[in-house]
Image (cartoon, rainbow, N blue to C red):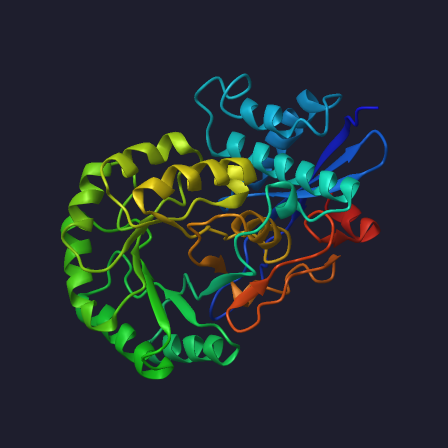
Length: 368
């Protein structure tokens, strides 16, 4: 008998509203899919702050459309995001809603077959997934504070740190002072990546890159929105560091111009915005251009990270996967199975599905 989708429900975990010197985690939107024979899978939707209610409503709308469909024809569900439902012009909420549901369907299928999701996707190319520690803070921080935070992550075993020493109004001297303090604190063997978070112009990005040459960056990320592939290529050919972009691009269609222009060295599509199938498609498209894939993951460190790890294991052109150590325990009271980071990597999982199990009773509080 064909397993069919019986119910799709969004669950909204509120943001951490307590004041913090560094950062509070944003809301998480999770998706529970139940089949007509009682198998439950969980997924997660990528979300920008203050859009959680719109995204929850989109999950409801999409869920009503998909109930009664086959729970194992995941490619058909995936294609709808751009096609029949998206009408060839979907936005963030459409892609993220479908990605969360698709991830949940993979989780349910893995549980049904008693196999980890990465095996259903064709198996692994790697024994472990290397991660980097993102230490973003929206609050002003001193060079000494950046240095202390970076050193704390290195002490926990992380081998690569990503930081944001430049904001829109940071002077060159101020940003370089942060990098100098962090490099002195962590030593020469630890990788450092810098994210400009799309606030620079091409000229400023090149200026920053030249000022940071002594710090041997793993990459320079997102100087500006990646919609202009020609300008991105101009920056790439003007700097010595590898250039990374792509977290705002949900599908292979948006990446095509970057590849054709030879505009990037590394891309970082988000697993909870693109989904597992599209992540594979984007990575395959990138491979002939010698572009590495570093999955973006500003989602939960439980379910979102699990999806990222299962997807990443099968990518031959895999780089580093994003990880936020400050939030790694945010959902520990609601679920089990969170994958630990050991010496900068997450080992290949063995549990069926994504390996994350939620407390049904505890989660009822957050059902939308």
